[in-house]
Image (cartoon, rainbow, N blue to C red; front, side, top):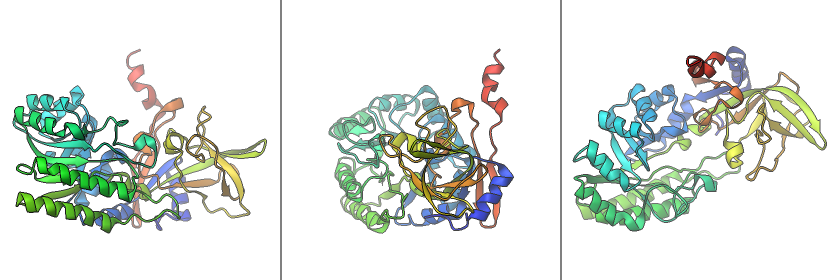
Length: 406
């Protein structure tokens, strides 16, 4: 779903104003995606997809709660205006900073490992707690984003759930929630199967249960040929499970969902400038000023992102789009495994602009300073207005923590 308001003229003008590489997000797209999740009682944004404070504030205004996976994300959520009771900490361990932050702010915890139970009870006696279950299977758009099954570190193994429940009670914790997430970009059938597993697990804690979470993992349409995810059917499958739990428990059960990528991915465009073109044997390369330090998904997963030339027409030819980094894997047009996958673009010269689409998730959030490259600027477009929501990192900021110790 390409935001119509981010047309060639708008993106080109923003690039002239703020420079490149430049991330541009459309607020209306994010709000529209949020509105589509009305079949769930609580929409908890998985901020690891994109934790920019302005996007967090936008989703808070929409009505979202928040998921945090680190002490830093807890602090980000608080800085964006979320109350402590709107934040859940989800992880498979407590590092010392996270445990201190959870205790200091009174943050609810979604426990992914049994060792966390004693650690939580030590700082939050008699706390309510959610248990994240690994159902024994998982699925995602790539094996690296599969979060269920025996090859995944995530969640309490389903066969150990009774022991975990007993341990929680021994430590004085009350199990009020169950959570499950099998992977990012999982298939409809596996996501529904996961729901059935969680409904079955709920029988063990119905006397204290108040909520269940469907997790995240909703697929995003990166290609025009990708099928639209049947969200209403999916919500109803979970709602049916909730009704069965409520019938046994004889009280309302809240149904949560925890999307990240699904809420923000399609809102974002990465604008990058062509800086050189060259032919290498049978390959034609277009070299741009953005690289995997800005968007690592193609390098990490072989992920596809639509790339098009802004305000440029002409007979198309097959080219490889690559970045500035001193790494052979710094290529935007590749498939899983790293093989090059040329795309069709019109003739390009230095100074032309390209738009890389559907980058609202896992762009800046996974960005790095590799090759001492600065973090890119970010802009939020809201109708006819636009504003800078992250300024471009200065070169002196790259090494300030080192220089002050010289």
